[in-house]
Amino acid sequence: MESASNACLSHRHDTQRASRPEGFSLLEMMMVVTVILIVASISVPIYTTAVVRAREAVLRDHLFEAVGSQRSAFSEHADS
Image 1 (cartoon, helix red, strand yellow):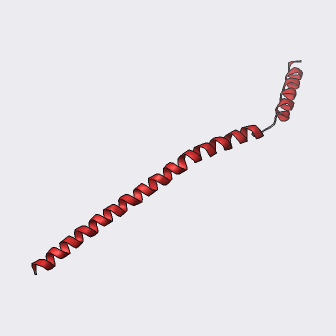
Image 2 (cartoon, helix red, strand yellow):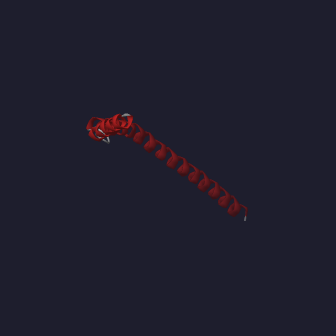
Image 3 (cartoon, rainbow, N blue to C red):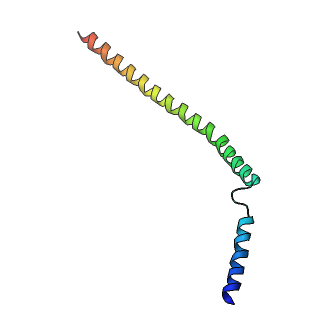
C-alpha cells in the first residue's frame, strides 16, 4: 500500500514540477537589464575621465623628458 501512495505522490510531484515554468520572467529580465544600464551609465564617464587623465600624465612625462633632453643637448653644444 505504501508503494502505491509513494508512486501517487511522486507522480503528483512530477506534474507540479513540469507545470512550473523554467527560466526567467520578462519582468526579471527587464530588471536585470535596467540595473546593468544604470551601472554602465555611471561607470562609462568615470572610465573615460580616467583614460584622459592617464593620457595627460603620459604626455606630461614625455614633455618633461623632451625638455630635459633639449637642455642637455644645448649644454653639450654650448660647452664645445
